[in-house]
Length: 178
Image 1 (cartoon, helix red, strand yellow):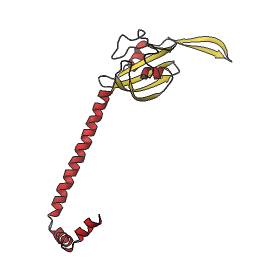
Image 2 (tube, one colour; image 1 turned 180 degrees about the vertical axis):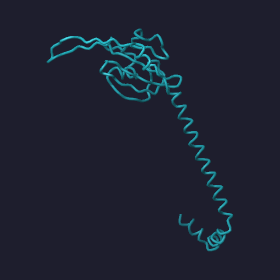
Image 3 (cartoon, one colour; image 1 turned 135 degrees about the vertical axis):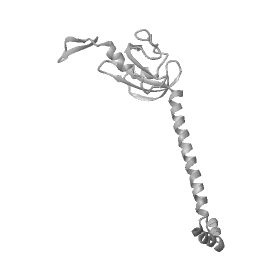
Image 4 (cartoon, rainbow, N blue to C red; image 1 turned 45 degrees about the horizontal axis):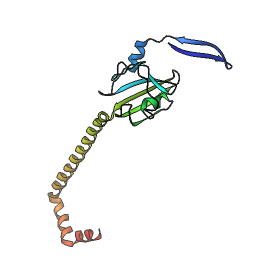
């Protein structure tokens, strides 16, 4: 159930209770598409300086309503930041001292924190392939230009220009000016 108090002119009127189908909620928050093998989604609630996990996660299936964090243990973890009303993303250490890339936000309508994260090594692996292909493309372009320049050097119409540059000392002048 989701409960919300109703007020009129600052006076309490009633409580609205809506029954939410857990299966629909879990289907939405357990969609791990694009999160690799270590990606996870945490739904948390702040209860008096402590964070309680209110839904199961991929890596910790028995965490719902069982795991309550110690406030002194994890001050700047993604789940703590999201539950405390902050929105952001970045590279942080999680509660188990594992480096993660995460995004977190607070959903005030339901008073819950939502955190999505993936372990850093897995996120960086895809960037490694991107860098590898960029370097490979650059090297292939350089090789192509070298072959093209070599081919242009053997063309007959360029020989008079090449002979003139070397015979007049123009090349020495250009190199001396540099």
